[in-house]
Image (cartoon, rainbow over all chains, first blue to last red; front, side):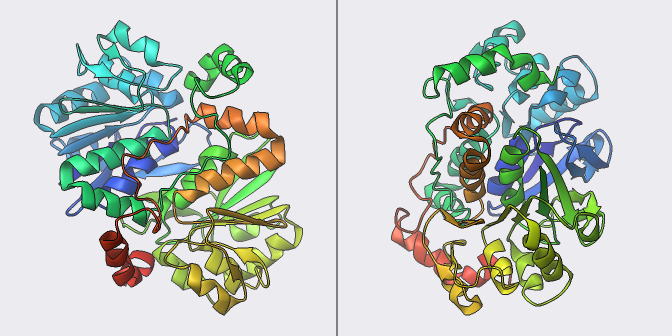
Length: 213
Length: 213
């Protein structure tokens, strides 16, 4: 089972590492980080390099596709190598997935038309412009398309997907292996829970938070 | 505020990326990934390269030190460059932290003697051999030493630490920015919650899970 995780400049690291840490532990999983070029790409903070081990052309038919978000998402909203790869890979994939604003890329590539999907809570309202049906949920399954909310939601998405692929016991073993017993010190992880002044501050700054501009 | 995140061969990626994704969003934070050599190190699955941008010697006095675990932890349990760097860095650090079996490295370097600390649930009982006092908690603060439980616990640790450093509102804004509203599909993230056959299976396989052997 080949799992292709897309890397591009200025992605958000946790968007890919959450799913990677879960899905790489599935039986017979072969995760591979792919990019337009082999070699390091820098994340959205500029402070970390993640290495693409293969080009898009090297991995045309993965079983699972994982698309992250981050500032760099904006560079992949029009037709180009990433869209072309996504459409080719999606034609034969078993699961096509995204985390955070990665769903905007999938939608812009034409893969979420008429499908329910989620995204970072600040970006969900942008999905209809690309033909998707927004759902303010943490993980959304619609057929073989699985989208996760912002950044950290990729962990929950990957565990739910692991259950679909390998059964509950296998997914539970992975969860216990990575000791995923979350105990956030605050109840501030969603706009419904967080203090409203903080929600409003992030809304006012959403262009910077989502797109780095 | 310089935050040095240690990389070594065969580390667990999420151990470092969880804290990185949180701490890099602190005001005035300058995160830097450090290693014995500059360049990519491979994670414990062999399927991912993370790039060290600086050598240990380049970053002798960070304000915050983050030490991960993973299979490669076993290579850093005796005196050597990593221990020497940790002792030097710790002498002037504001916070010295670990995720997963990174606490075993800190303890072996002599930095947790007599201190309460945690680790991956399968490894907590190894802490006393290195002079630390084991605590089966997700995040343990003892003075400036902050240790987190297995793999995913680094996110909770870093949010709690962010609160200490920058105040509750700043930490809550980070939590909302990464949409950390965890909704695991199973209640299997700790040995107390997970189905007991799965707990026993992981215990029986702990040498492989922790150390890759």
